[in-house]
Image 1 (cartoon, rainbow, N blue to C red):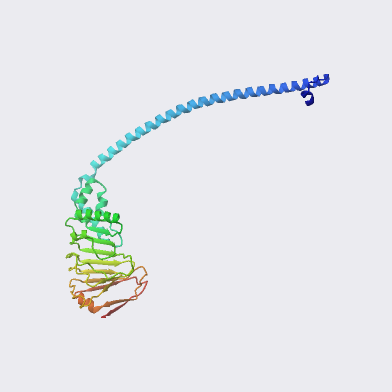
Image 2 (tube, rainbow, N blue to C red):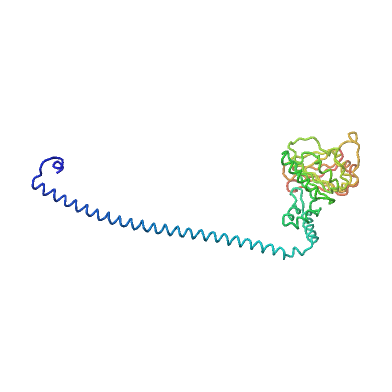
Length: 338
């Protein structure tokens, strides 16, 4: 049949009959396909119309949603305004307005006193003045005029110039508020016994704590410079060293003639001999506290105390306290004169 279709020969009668039957069958198949195509076209058109209706409905719903959202935002804004108005009115009606400022001042001082009693040189003090001053304008005004709240001066030495400048500014801010209150000074990460110059204006301090943190293990023996002003009111001096044991010269107490209590952590005193410097007895010292390290770096074996030197330098000493971790080691106290 394929050869006949490719030729120009006239088909025989039987061939013509066969070809006619094939054409009828193919024509019927085309009609069937046309019917299916027409049905699918109708279905597609219906789907297209549904999509158009849904799209229009979606656009309408979207516009409605936007209107609802805008209305919600407007109502929320109105609600916030009303809430703020209520809070302002509550502030006006609050009993805080009826409490005299002096009562609040007494409460702040009680809070400061509690923090002061629990203060620890190893833990930064809680700044009552800054905390209560952040609550409201009235409390800030009270805090700024209550000098005692600013009297704990906590200063950290830094090699970073920017950080040092920030610390100095903070210290100046505190000194500007302290007025005639008695200052209590804590110096952290000090590499020497040289006090910041700005502290010279608060020589009325009664307590001074210095936490030495030398960068090098081997340093010359330390003492307060001759230029250090006299802190005539200082009664308690605490010096600690971490992580290494630090030696200080026995003349280091010259700026503190009224010192009553001396506390030393991880610090050794190097006694100057009479031919090195004349001995000036420190007659006001009553209590000497010596503590070892808690870091197991230098566990105590013997605590050597030169009785003759102690008596000669501190003739009125009444209390000698040794404080250490007895679970690490059991120190043996040796009293002798070298």
